[in-house]
Length: 149
Image 1 (cartoon, helix red, strand yellow):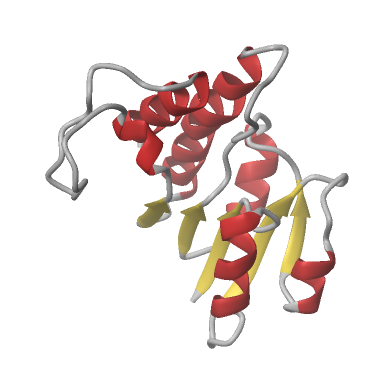
Image 2: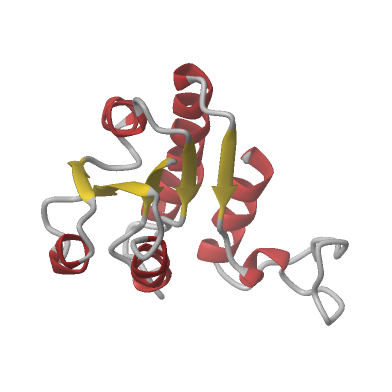
């Protein structure tokens, strides 16, 4: 199976890529030219340069893939321009899902964060409801991205 992965150079994505590279799956990872590409190269994945904000690069990377795993997100603790969270976590999510539909890919795994649940009862499970408040703009935009997915 050929799998397209966003966020493969990030903390969670690097571990995912390493695990999947030990299988028979063919991996294609979206990466920015400014990213540390060594973990991807070390695991023998195909690298497609692009960005979540560029749907054309997403479609090019997904073309011919059977599945998509979206691990990408802007998680910085603080951004001077708060739009950076929305651009990646919300608009980027829209781009991914539209590209998936346009390329006819049947399955997507969308990885988010527990922070998207906000202030809610613990433990958090698949049945948990979102709390009314999110602790940060990051959490709020990740929640929005989940709702889009």
